[in-house]
Image 1 (cartoon, rainbow, N blue to C red):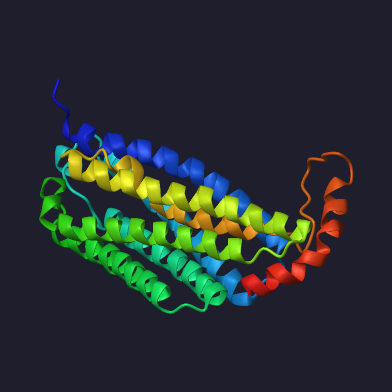
Image 2: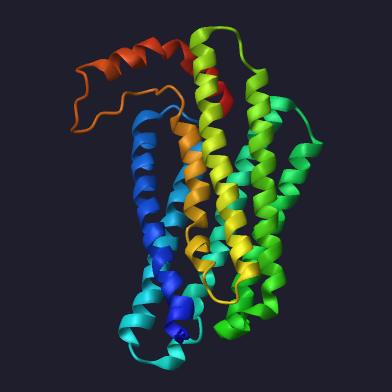
Length: 284
């Protein structure tokens, strides 16, 4: 049975929105932990986190607005099912801005760790390419809103995804290598470094793999199945930053309505307080 116009694009969009919403819930939780526990971070890092959270919130809201407008308000309107509007066009632009901000942040961290110029330059070029392609896709969708004609600017979309995925792989590899070289031989400090390395590998590689799957599905299939992966890219990038930030020893104990093992959190904060200066020097 052939797919309808709704099934081709809006089926994957609906699934992608569900995945995106779940990831957004995890992102909000990590944001709460960050702002409650890392109050001594530099103001520019807190501004970066706030900006990323705001952009991811806009991403989820715009997806909901677009789906509600097309599937509910214009229910049964075949014309609406075949074209995008200005709300949908903002989504790739937001993803491009989020990915570039995240990759610029990690490039700066690598610059501090390694003092190398050329790898950071490559990262900046790739991140800038992803940003420009995201903005270019937004402009192109407004100029060519018909879903069936999106192939006219597919080169922009493909270059953006490929640049972003390559940048993620490069950043993950260099961060892991640089952090491994900064081990001190002290058990507590090395434990924190290993934890950051593990989180970097998990989130960085996951984001790169998710982006590559999105790219592969887009190239291999002619329908909108890639939207299942594409709609949540901004959340994956932001989660990769948040996971790295909250993997450090906390400046303030995070408390909620759940008590686990009595005052274990307080003892842990005291135990790692001597490591706080090292981590703050890395992230400020």
